[in-house]
Length: 495
Image (cartoon, rainbow, N blue to C red; front, side):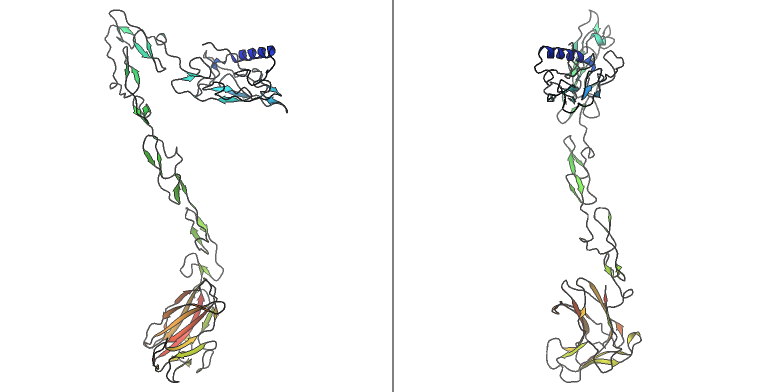
């Protein structure tokens, strides 16, 4: 089919405007913008034939805006490319006076559908170039001689010097090339050539095909069947067989989970090292120092990174008490916030600031007082507890000594250290917490190990101040009758 060059189309449109000026310059007047002298080579196969060679095989010289009489917008350069022709002055529109012409009129761009363009590049009749897609092989854009239409020019018998038989025409059909003279057979010596030799046609098995249609090498075509979706003929690695090339996790942008492989199966894209798999992507919400209750040091944010939670104010150290990422102290590095070795009082008196009492006593022989005795750490005095007999049963019998209200900070950890000897009697130490109004909250206790009269360091009493605590009182008790307890070197540390 003969095609009118694009500049010829422009001249026809221009003449039409002169005869019928009403509507001249509108978007309806021309199907293409001004183009090179031969537009038949402008828009080849959009998949890659928009080249720099004419149909004649010679080099292609791209046209300029001046060559194409284009004042604005983008136009085809005649060699498969485009050229930018600038914009219009203020108040004018590209396409207002015709495709790629500046004018005061309005121009509504056409779509590929409105322009009946199925492929390749085409002007939108204003100032831009549309890409109307590619053709499915074996068709190419303009392959049947119609611009911007997918088509295929069948191979002729003469073009391949075929004398006889049938052959694939390259467009999905079959070319019939006649028969041979008497005494000759088609394919006797060469495919589709007459000759004296007999021709053994190929089979689907001989060419390893299970789909598609192929020349049999003599004078016929063999049909090797069709494929069942999602497989296609040549869809895998073998062009003669049904196959399907699975997609990949990368093509799906999938980091985890499973996705369809496009061939009826599924792909496993792994698991997330951190976080959870959401929509085939690993999603991780990092923890914070606050959510992890970390006061200091470095923690793992749960998403593969480290998070710094600062440092501690001296003398507290990070993790000093054995709890990671918590500011704390140990007796080795921090002084006690309260200590009493009973060296300052007079023997035979109760220690200053302590409350003394006895439950269930029968006579006046019990006492709790400062006594002279070699004490641990080089001291000479300690706190002596003495009980006689208990009169009947009562609640919490024994002799008691208790400190005044000592201030604490809610949520902080505290450590109580002490020394004692009890000659095997039942004795213990308590930590009692109180509110700011000195109302009792809770208590924690630790028994002293039994001994034979030698001083020993008692097990540490570790406590945490409750959320509403403001004070603690330390209480020491001897809870056997007719017993004795020497107590010394009481120390309270804040961790």
